[in-house]
Image (cartoon, rainbow over all chains, first blue to last red; front, side, top):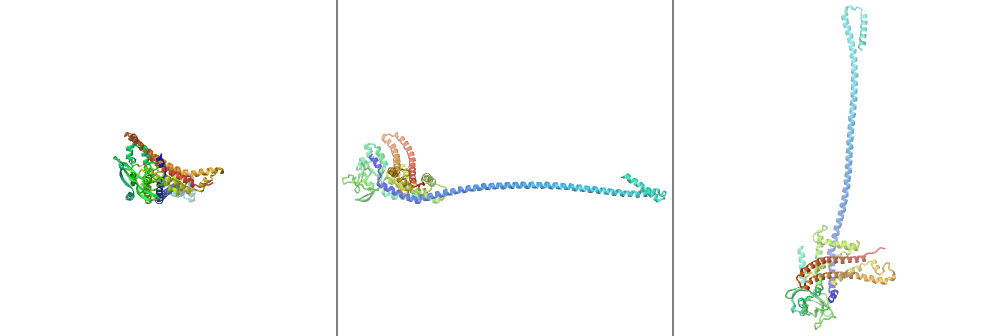
Length: 170
Length: 363
């Protein structure tokens, strides 16, 4: 019991030394340890925080850029599709047009050729008729010669025959 | 860098050496043979309460061990005394060993003043009326000085490593101590003091926390003499710490704090004569609880460990030794937890009290 009392009685010397040691311990550490340590920890935390924030921002930027890229790409693809489609259409159109024109041209040429042929044929026919007429007159004159004295009567006869021929031929 | 640490540690030891004298004393030649440890234990049998009290109370000498031939290996600590008649006197406590009287002082070995240095009467009696002021470097003070020096070296090195490494990730000492510093900041200071006040009180809280923690842990290490002193189990030490918390609380008390003491809102005026004394008692009971809590917890831990050791000598059986050792190991693990926990609790409650005083209520 006596010993317990001595345990629970603070000694002046211990109080003095504890106060002195604790104040010195506090002053030295506060100035040379806690301040730099807490500042360093705080600075590091702030840097970590700002780094994380900028990383987050960069990620968002990236996402946005990616979305932009996607959109641009999609647009480009559409454009290409359109251009190709236009080209295809134009080609189709050109081909059809060319074909139409060509067939038209061909039709015209055929038509022209046909009329030409018709005309040539008619011309040839009339030439042939003339030829035949003069030939027949010659032949007939040679054949008949002497038998035909009156020229005007002969002419009449011949043209009568030729007419008959002509109508027969037609 | 390591060289510098060693140089500073060695120079510290060299500096203190003249004040400490190691001696192997002979129990038989003592002026009061019945009070030397080996002698008393052999003659009167083992006294567990004396054994325990010798270990946990403060002392002017640091007893290391008792050799087989009855000699005690003791470190004599410096005695610093002041009295009106004789002024200041500084000498080694070895001069007071075995009941010797030096410069009119003697060490009381019996009774209520056991372990105190008193003025000796001409016939060797104790002059109880006129006690000298004792500023000696006792066992607790020496242990505390060593702990404080260790703390200083540790945290100055830590601060230097922060200056060197800048803002890079924690490494070495940093990765070991930074989580503890952050624990004090994030779990003690900020929740209790708030973001606007906590920075002002961080140095005090960190200092108190590590001062208590280092002393608690060093007190648990049993053997080589700078360790094993019962510093935070000394009522004077815990009293000083509590007084610091009280002073900081009172100085930083806001208007709201004082208003709650002298004109508690919501209390009818006729109750104030009761309320004001109660509130004033509350101001003092908070730090008083801090003082008692730390003192009692650490002392109790030491007493349990010592009791378990004492069991071996009480039963005088070697077979009990392994059982005792196992229990002591278990208790030491528990006490390591308590060492940390009590430092945490003291700092937490200090922060809480300061936080309550600092906060300005907005009605």
